[in-house]
Length: 417
Image 1 (cartoon, rainbow, N blue to C red):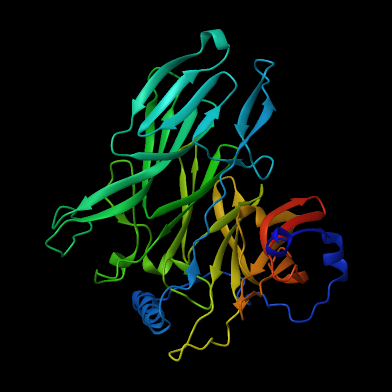
Image 2: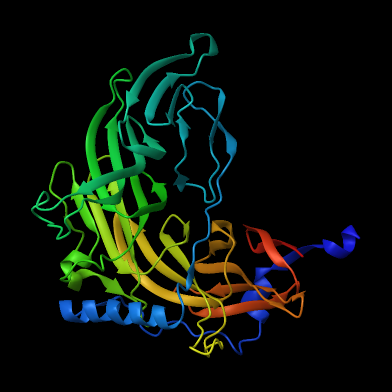
C-alpha cells in the first residue's frame, strides 16, 4: 500500500547532454527587450498600475506565488587564526556568503536573540563568556553578516504615520497608518564590549534575502504601491538613510520594468559596502520569491500563475511560468542584464545554478485532473543572455520535485508522488 501511495524517483541528469543534444523545438522565447525599460512620464507610471489593478480584479486575484526560502544548516571550516575548526553558515556558492542568525570568526560568536545582539567569546572553551548585549529596542533583527570588525544586521521596523507629522510624506487620512520597513544596521565591533552603530538604512517593504561577496552585501526587498495615495511619487515605496526624512526611493521615471508589464509590486535590489558604507540601489516592477547568486551575477525568480477569464476558463497563457531577472554584481554596482522565462515553478534557491556562464533551473508544472496528479518536471539551460538553449521536460510524470542539487556538469533531482 505504501508503495502505491508513495513512490520515490531519483533522476540523474547529465547537463552536457542538455547543452549539446536536446531538441530545440517549443522552447519559450527569451524576452526580446534585453535592456531595462523606464517609464517616460508619471502619467504612464500611474496608468500601468491602474491597468494592472483592474486586470487583477477581472481575473479574480493574485497571480504570484510566494515560495518560502530554505533555511540552511552548518558546515565545518578551518580557522586560520587558531588552528581549530568552527561552524559557519552553509552556503550554496563558494565565496558567496549567506546571512544567518549566528556568525563566528572562530574566536568570537555574534548572534541575535529576540531583540538583542549578543557578542560572546567562544574560544578557548574555558574562557567562554558573554562580552556584551545590545538591546535593539523595537527593531526586530532577522539575520546578520560579519566582515572583520564590522557587523551588519537585517531586520524589520514599524513606522507610524499621522496626519501632517511627516512633512515629506503627508498622509491625508485622519487616523494613523503603520508601515513596515526593512532596516539595515551597520555596527563597528572592534570594541566587543560596546558595538557602535555606524549607519542605518530603511527600505519600505519586506526583506527577502541577501548575499555577501567580499565586503559588499546585496539584498532584495519586496514592496507594494500606495493605492490610497494620490500622485505618482506617493505610490512609490519610501526610503531613508540614518536620520534623514523618509522620501520616495526613486522618481517614477527612474523605476524600471520588463515587458510585458505586470505593475503590481516593486523589487528593490540594493547593496551596502561594509567598508565604505556606500549604498547602491535599483528598483523595478516585479516580485521576488527566490534568489540565486554567483560571484558575478544575481538571479531573482518569480512565478506567474495561469489567468482565468470571466467564465472561469484558462486564458491562452495558462502554463505556469518562472520569470528570471538577471543582474550583474561588481563591487557594489548593480546592473540589469536581462530576463528570461521557463515553464513551471521552482522549489527553492537550490533549483537554480550558474555554470560556465549558463544558467540552469529545475521546475515543476503542477496539475491535478480526474483524481490524478498530472504534474511533470523539467530542467532548462539558459545562456548568459537568458535564452533557452537546452531542456529535458516531462520528467517523472505524476510526481513533484522535492530536492535539487547541481554538482559540476551533473544535476541530481529527487521527486515524490
